[in-house]
Image 1 (tube, one colour):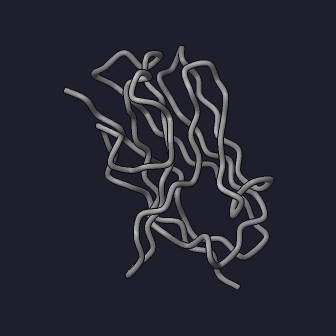
Image 2 (spheres, rainbow, N blue to C red):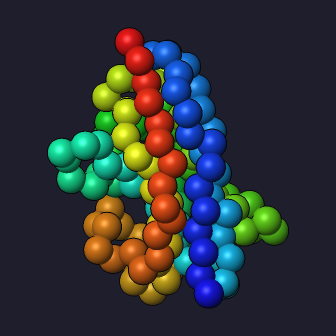
Amino acid sequence: QVQLVESGGGSVQAGGSLRLSCAASGYTFINYCMGWFRQAPGKEREWVSSIRTTGITSYPDSVKGRFTVSKDNAKNTLYLQMNNLKPEDTAMYYCAATPWWVGCRETATEYNYWGQGTQVTVSS
């Protein structure tokens, strides 16, 4: 069955860095757009980044220039490098997958598969 397993979360001070990983299995990784989302308590799930099958990446303005999404197709693994972290980045971070023909947008409902999440906490 399909599994997405995130890791790499933790607690850091503002200005610090973390690298999240998402190990995928049970489907053809290279045929899927991959995304990162986050959700803070009491807030809606927010799109953080996406990477197309071609490797083209997208980010919202809130993380652009600080976060970098990448993937290793040989390892079926998605990454999110987060630099210059801010307290407002504190949230549960999820990776998600959707078939390439659906598109690779920022809408969470378009993603079929989700991981269980990894917590990121940034203190000031």
